Image (cartoon, rainbow, N blue to C red; front, side, top):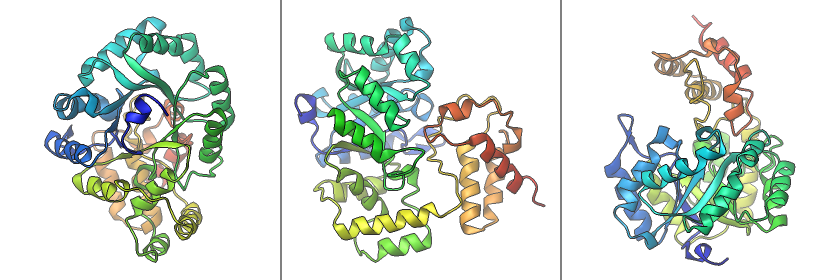
Length: 373
């Protein structure tokens, strides 16, 4: 790897879709401490997008990172998101607004964001790939890539159409590894075929691989090793085509844990691989909704339903049979839509990277929480 690829100091990055929050705002004091710890321990890769945290991620990076460190001390990735442009003419002004929001003059990586079979034609029609190359020629982008949420055959076609793309960001973790709906490993193999470095997102599947069911937890406990997150992140980083593994960290505890095993990274052992395979089998057997709480589904919901929060209540109730979930269902539907308020417009399903049948799941959620006495 040449250029900025060689300037990335380690294979672990700070994903800024989930940051420390306080009263609905990014906790700048905590985030600043985390940024400092990250850089002091030899890491330098940060990933954001305009829609993350309802537009609060980019300004938080300007406040806590880019205004406090010289430009050569960090690598910054941002994205062109489908929701923020309608025509070719929209792309450059949007890009310039991102530079301003982040407080930088260029992005090290700029990704076509969350591409699927359905969204790909829009990117092509609006010449998004060509405009990104023009911006690269102008020195405003150093490397162009994409983040991807669809099947392997779609990825293969896009990389065939656009060999100029330099990296691919994939959802990749040991649960989704052979999931037929996500095809993590098949997509990874397509990247191998085309020689594209892989950036991993959702290595702990939105926290699902941290909070394990008791039988699964016992398997990892028997290793007498690191945290649950350590096995998930090291699993991803053990693959040779993986260039970067992103982790969304919400506090210094998560930061310190991640640093402890990624500062001097060691791939998973055979015994650890066997353990996570067993965990995968147990987790797959559970009747839960595979939501990662990315919250992409919320922005376009006309009924203002807090879908990920309602799914979390559903999963907790299914797994732990606790009535505490009913209380939280009430919290998440106070002044917001209930599951039964869904008008089945389908906007949420088009936005969902997991390709979940959200409308059907909302009916199940309503059945459980809105019919109980």
